[in-house]
Image 1 (tube, rainbow, N blue to C red):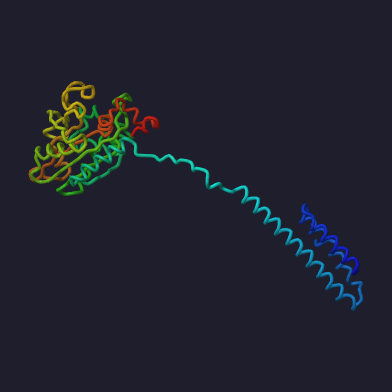
Image 2 (image 1 turned 180 degrees about the vertical axis):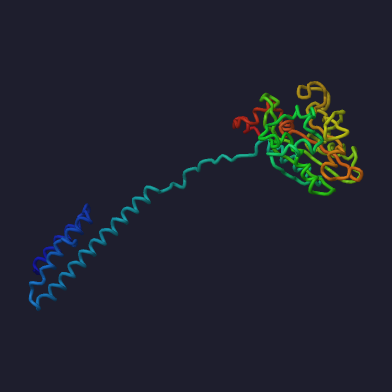
Length: 337
């Protein structure tokens, strides 16, 4: 039996020394339940009491040597595998890196941020509100009852008879006036919706920024001074403004506000269509009915409001002649800004 164990040991160690040895097959062949070494150990019952411990010790030594050889083979195989993996993943740090293209703000975002900075500098706070609005806040609280013809020019998208997509950001002003006692000094930028066909100057979705000031002794002069400062900050220090009489249901008196053309200085050019002036926004003194609807006494407080289209300001500022370009996500166009 000693000779058999020595033979098994020699054969096993030789087989495990081969570089292409199948370790699992050899482990089963020599150490498995039906392996050669196990078969020898099962025959130890036939040995004498004197031989049994000697052969048992030898068998354990043979098993230990075979297991050590298997472990060494496996460790070497893992090391070779790791070396191969590291070689495959090796990086050449001298190769120039790939340029990462950095994004930038959309022209509408650029203009909105500039507008916000201008009015924040004048002490205004930014307030936002829901885009899905109640008919009451979008129209009725703003002095536009259900049968008012102004609803035709602000036709929007209705979810139910009383729930709609807001057609202006003025509902934010109504909500603020309901919950806040004067003084109030806010701007409300955001998306608005109207049932307009898409063309070069119209879109069913666009952006507005509206402002509201309510306090004691607020006059049209305060409105004019505010808008003059806005115009100079946005279009240049040489910019002048003018008011033209107009009608808005929520302001009285109301005005359309023009700025002197910042390209030709008022002499007349393609941008201002030869007139020297460009219409940019609407404004006026808050109608007493709007103050009453929102729980503010018009005998004590007065105020002004104004509203402008962010797309219109962006188109003027960057000389864009088609609003659709702002929504097409063409990087060739957007990359210019």
